[in-house]
Amino acid sequence: MDKKNSDVSEIDKAIAKAQEKKAKRQALNGEAVTKPVKLKAAAPPKAPKATDEEKLAKRAARKVEADAKAAVRAEARAGRKAARALAKATPHMKKIERAASRLPALTDEARLVFNDVTVNFAAADVASIAAHLQHFNRVSATGRAVGATAPSVGASVTIVGGDPRYVGKTGVVTKAQRIRCYVEVEGAKKALYLFISDVQVAQSEVATGTNG
Image (tube, rainbow, N blue to C red):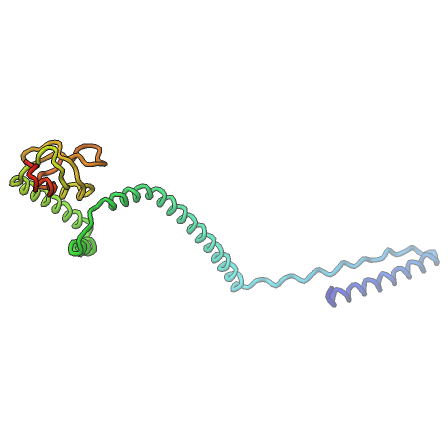
């Protein structure tokens, strides 16, 4: 209790005591007893009215707090969205990684050319270059196959062209045509259909003359 309220309380006590004495005196003299007057407690002081600057400051503080909460919610939503996107993309990435593991190794010179093309050319240009290279390989393989000697059926051959997954593997010729042949390779579901120039007869068979 502050000093002001304490002073009021003491005054109330003094007035009540005086009124009590007066009532006793009136009762002894046969006079009508005057009812004591109760003083109302002093109202607490009102808080000072906020200034315009204080109101603006409060509104600004509330806005900052609201913006901060909104940013946290947005970040959480973005995190959940990214997690869902990653979960969906993972199976595709695994397929791409498996496909990359089957690609043949590049020489240092080829790696420099590959890096130059993929880094310095737009995606559309890279796709066009890849298509032209595939066509070039097909034309070259056809040309080489025309002048090549077809391997004999049953000959053991090493795959040197065609599907990158099988380059470097060995197989057995099951059918030979003028410029094409079928080669059975372990791990392949069916015989590979290759240009004759895409296979190389094992040196041991060439030396013994078993091919052709």
